Length: 100
Image 1 (cartoon, rainbow, N blue to C red):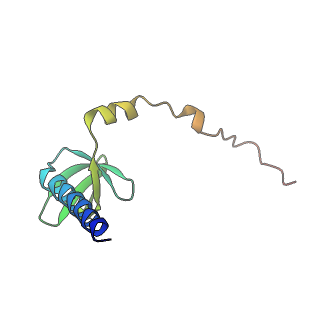
Image 2: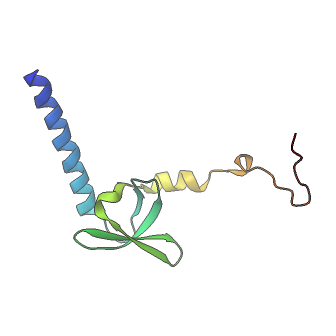
Image 3: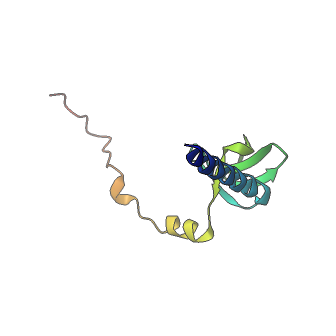
């Protein structure tokens, strides 16, 4: 039982250190994911907060703890080439669906 607690504690400490290292290494211009799944670009950083640009000219302030990970350039390129056209339902303004 003691061994399990020891290894669980070590794993938790490593995860916390990785989060601290990430937050300390962030710089303006980095692309990040938040814990809520938002993708944004880092604009400014203070001790406890981070300003993220979520759309051109739209900057929001977040707690640093809300940053989950950095988006690597190769991940960004994969997303840019994705084709979502099959996922979008067609909408016809002239037709009203009939209730059954």
